[in-house]
Length: 110
Image 1 (cartoon, rainbow, N blue to C red):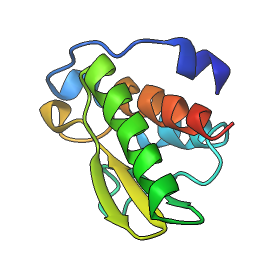
Image 2: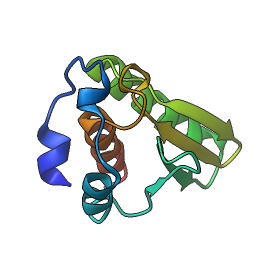
Image 3: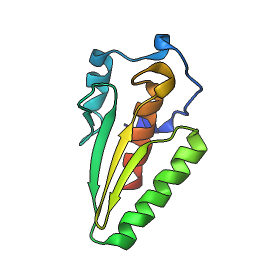
């Protein structure tokens, strides 16, 4: 995960940047709790918190990562949870940017 978290997202467009399911599966071993979405074209993870304040602090930190990396997840937020879903629309599935952002988001909770 450290290696992924140190990388920076790059502009990626076109199916040639789409990662195979095998490559994603190999890297998911380094990203505990992340899983392929039902569509197999996204990654998702649910984070649990003690209260709304901590949830929103996490959401704001994720927003900063998204801004800094110019790669924006879909977030579903409730009182004590945040579901993060990553995909790269410009490649029609998953790219290195999704794995990088997943690792960077996980680093928030370490």
